[in-house]
Length: 79
Image (cartoon, rainbow, N blue to C red; front, side, top):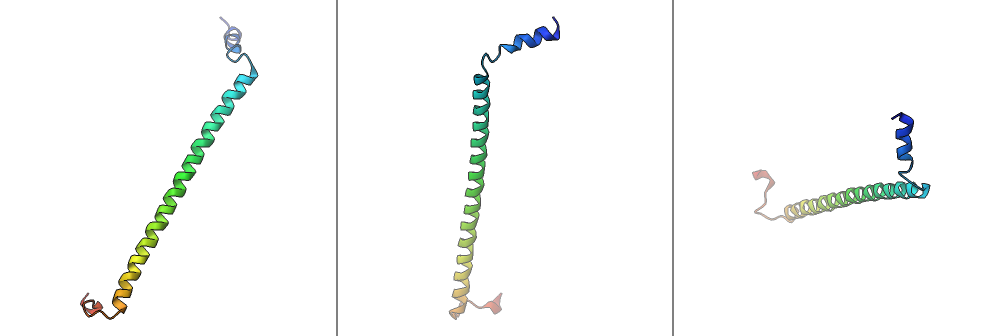
């Protein structure tokens, strides 16, 4: 069997160009959805990091406020 005969066997793989276009569009759609999901995951992670950073800053501000209130039990000299 020559290479031309083998190539001819695959010519009927997609009877219509529309089928090939549909397959390519489906593959593109899947890639786009995966890319969108990855972007959403990255955004969610960034928002969580910002939330945690704000929470930590608020906690540190509370400790600072506690010290500035002149509470006798909290003395920086003891550290």
